[in-house]
Image (tube, rainbow over all chains, first blue to last red; front, side):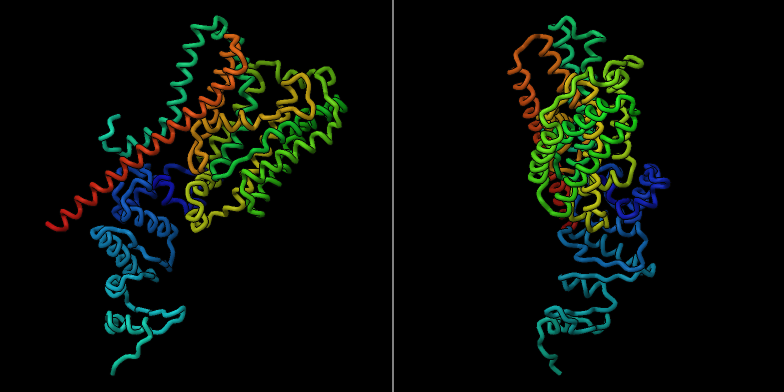
Amino acid sequence: MSVRENVSLAVLPTLTPWGVLRPDKERALALRFMDRLRIKATSPAQSVRSLSGGNQQKVVLSKWLAAEPRVLMLDEPTHGVDVATKADVHRAISHLAAQGLAILLISSELPEILGMSDRVLVMREGRLVAELARDEATQERVIRAAAGVAEVA
Amino acid sequence: MTGRRRVTPHGLAAALRLRETGIVIALAAVCVFFSIRATNFLTLDNWQDIAKEVAIVVAVGVGETMVVLTRNIDLSVGSMVGLTAYLTADTLAQHNGAPLALIALLAVGVGIGLGLVNGLLVAVARIPAIIATLATLAIYRGIAFEVTGGQRIAAFQLPDRFLELAASKPAGLPTLAWIALGVALAGGVALRLAPWGRDLYAIGSNPEAARLAGIPARRRVIAAFVVSGALSGLGGFMWAARFPTVDAVAATDFELAVITAVVIGGVNVFGGSGTVLGAVLGAVLVATIANGFTLLRLSEFWKIFFNGLAIVVAVTIDALVTQRLQEALRRRRAEVLAARHQEAEA
């Protein structure tokens, strides 16, 4: 399916007054997000499958941002994305957080967590084992908590 | 198109449209060939014949297209057409004065019921569609045998105004073809502009992503089967008007004609892509070839053989196009990545 069809997927009802889709509105929505998240696609009609991994992620992000959520849960948003686009996605996430969105970022990549989060919650075997504020979150602390090793005083 | 050429989005869109253009070209070639070889091919009469031939396949094919888009298949359409055709003919033979619209609604209503059973078996009982509808193909045919009790309804038992549906040609197009055209237009518009139409594509192209996007996949799949049943009911109504006798074996193997049209029309059997226009063109192509072969007095063998050949050719072209696109895309992605890495290192 195309970029346009993907971006609109979660908000189709808002684009379909009287049960009929408004292609013009749908296109405008897609163009808005392509611009906002800098999705590198030549047109909203381009197939998502033909985009790079990072741009595919941005399309997924657009799909849910279109629904104007107040809380956004992101599970491995930069999984399988090249370095340059990763920075793009991070920038987009920070920008959203700055706008007041609550973002729950799930990631197995430590630098990403430490770089992005205001608060880090560490889970171990299905339980929360630590809550660290931005300035106390270090790689060592997170790993210790995750591994269940007591902190050395 | 050279292999090295980059696939631009325009090339991509063109390639996707190519599916329909391809059939149009094939259709044109077939027409030219038959026009030269068969003297009465290019007559109005003959085209009206083809239109009548195609009408029922198209009406039922629209429903089949919707089912196939969701990565399912409905093998029971032939049995549903047969059963509803008999019910239509039988009811009209007993109540000669019954309003036709009411009878059509009855046939569609029965079709909805049968389609609902298919939908529930697939979406709720989670039986693979190919198995579930293979079972109902047999069950519905069995019901038809029970209902007919070996009887057949001949055309002379039916009211003339009903048989007129097959005989009359308002504006040069057989009434049956007008009905099919209406169904195709409605179906095509629904798939393009109704949100639930879009949902069918989403479900077929990535079921998991569709579920996560909040699409009520189960309901949509059931709905697709219900539409397929409803249109099979309409097809049964049309069948009863078109053929001189209707009995328990009416429309046997008809599902093969419908699925052939849909597949040649480029509706992907793995779901997610295809259009009503493609299915209609596929039906017209198949019917035109069959018609031309009849005019040339070629044996039934060649007709069936070419039907099969057409499927193989259509699916092979599809596979090649898809493969080519994917290779080109992979290459392009690799190029972009390599360029980025160079940038990053520089």
